[in-house]
Image 1 (cartoon, rainbow, N blue to C red):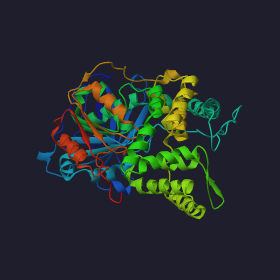
Image 2: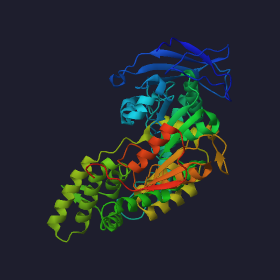
Image 3: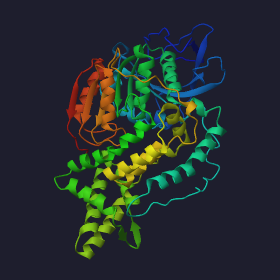
Image 4: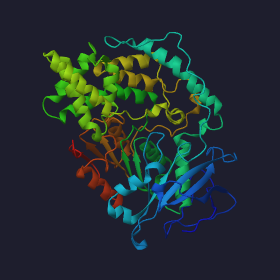
Length: 509
């Protein structure tokens, strides 16, 4: 493949003439209105051996093409393994977050694809601006220690939680730190949102000489896919939205879904492990509001037991350890023999140690800037408090805490930074209706959001997976999900309608 500082033009943010590739990547040159530059770069990661790597230089602000500042998007391409005559086109993906690097897991995701897809598609990985190997990136954030709240509130180990005091204390501690990061990065922070990313994605398509993308969006990647479809509807051959958000999501929607999503997860998870598990799980949640568990002189409360369960509950690989925690917590809380209860507490402690929590993605300042550029509709303090109380009543302190952090996520940041497509209020027809996949008990992208999105995208296919898995295609053994999506990607023929796929246990579950 020969590409040396190939320059091509994107004359405007609107419709641009597409260039059809007859080979995996073709060089394209246009007139003086050049808006991007594609340059060869070394593939620095050993996992990308055999890939072709590039840097795509694009405008920093796609809303102001007279601005000479730029962003650089790191890309890698794995050419189709089959004969050129069988090549279908280019497929790309986004792994979610926001804040996840596509390049870091590119080889893993590409290797999971069925052989036919590896044969027929160039696979394109990339890091969105601000993430991984792409620029610009935030700097100087978090150097100032968080301020001590004027009215600090330490939520109790048991009993009622004062959600108003807790929310106010949380905002007083976090908002100044995020605001300081924004002020230190006025040339970066306002330009990290998804509105800019979808234009980068279209520049990538054109730089590679592709008429259309085949796209797989996971979690936050579904937002990219949906927004891209709204802005560039003719440039998608086929696209799957796997773990989808609602069509018109704002901060209020994001927080509001958590008033019930954790309850859905609890009951769906319990139903997968026999007749006794649902009631057992519910009893553990209730008991932890009244008492704690002691083991080896260490006190375990709802605040450190529930995160280990719920942060991992949307990943089937964690199921065995979660079941062990629930079973041993139940025995420690309810066994009438104190010695057996103590042994159960010790086993629970060991099980908790195996459930290493994933890093909290909200701790990345880049995530604040992306979400707060994307999500409008900031709820009032009263609204956040009411939603947190409802989530607590419906499920647990973990659910209430999740609502609180999402509802106040953009505190300290200007509302003027929001840039998103206009909300839609009626079915929206696309040339390529997507396949949408959501799990009924997923806590990260709740099922109702995907269902609502499917209602707004006319002709879409909606697949319900009866589990709690977050991102389902090729991440579970469900042939019902995997075969349907694979066939759609290969043929670009929408299956249409709705279907429900049974829970498919992963090996060892």
